Image 1 (cartoon, rainbow over the protein chains, first blue to last red):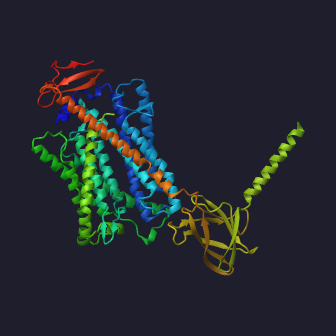
Image 2: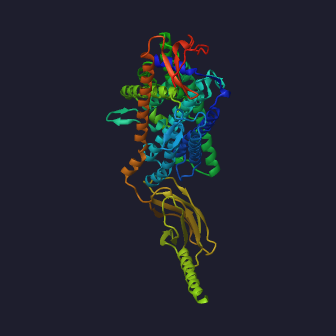
Image 3: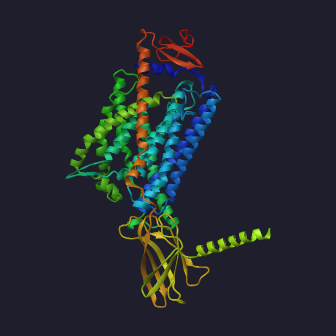
Length: 411
Length: 218
């Protein structure tokens, strides 16, 4: 309560219209760069979903395949923009430009001064670009179908996570700056531009899990199986939805995030089969294992239903707290419990979607990997539930920490 | 002057001839048989993963004319790869010789699948090729490199958790150490450190600009 009062005080200190702010140039540099990078990261994510299906349906015959080009141009562009912002802000720091000082930048390597988010973005994309030739080399040694759990796939994943976190820091710090202004730049549904950017990013992060969901195959433990798909779902949902709520602290933000996520999921599932079919026809390729052309994956397109259930859990928790007399912008309490509760839809909803399609609409084709991973037995689900609850609680704590940091941080 | 230049010119000519001869000679040759046809394969680059393999194929019997079609490089059983397209065409300089270009994607055994048409009829066969790998790194080293961002990510998160906790404590101290009604915050404003008091804010949290309860701490 105490720090929320302080936050409310700090919120309205700079009583100036946005257009007359001294640091307007700096705000524009950072926000324009952040929006361009957001586009590039979405392009990378779409390329990644395409690449995953390319591996399944066509196979990886060389490095320069179209999905790789889509992915790596997005990453390279992100890295380039991060580098430009770091250099530009270093220059502006030493020229003592408005809005570039110790409070709005961090020092790195003893000389450079730049926003933390752009430094992370640069480091993340550098990691990814470093992982690319190593990954190619690993494929050459061990084959084209090495799974997600290969060293350089994980290196790429960590790089993407670091770049994504950096992107969120960049938007969150801008949102914090925007909140200081009495008449800030235009708002949509009460949210400023950087807050929308944050929601799109966290939606994209959760959507990233969906095309890779069937890579999370069960771990066989003697006669039973530990399901891994609920773990990745609950990790993504509890960390992202709780952090987005705590960063923005407005009712309905998690549901808005899921709406964005859903549109991204549908767009991805529509684009990928179309792109694969087009490239197979254009480049004269053949499908592997005698498979036919890919079709719209209805299971993955409906999977945001799970995230919607989780968003409702968060909003219900926040609503209950407001009814108990807490202010709208107060910290969300009991986040670990909310995270643990998210494990229930994570375990149940994916098999339920597959079951409903299997019984009510058997004419709709379901890919074999979906049937393999998302049709578990009841006992396996019961065994997995406590593990998923634990994962949800832990990641909810992480989401709480990140949400607070993103709400306060202006660097 | 003339005597000085002559040895240089001769050396240069010698080097050009040596390099040209080396470039035109195959690095390796092997024979194969498909149906009744005996074939000679000349490798101008060795089969290495990720690198273009340049080779020629020709009948071993002088004067015999063969035609090659439906050529494809297929992974041998147990090799995790997909068939790779092969470029084949008649050599411009030598009759009855075909140039083959292909880039294998994975190390190990591959099979050059082809159909040979000649005077004895049409025959389909496969010629094994052993594709060499780049130098191997130990698996543990691969994992070590691959996982190097993880400790950095954890350290960064730890650093941020500490920053958040310190920030929280700082804010709580500011509001709890002062008497009720004087809960404050400080902020830098145009280079000045300003102390803001709670009574400067109305019940809706809007800053009251007319009040003079701010203290300049600088």
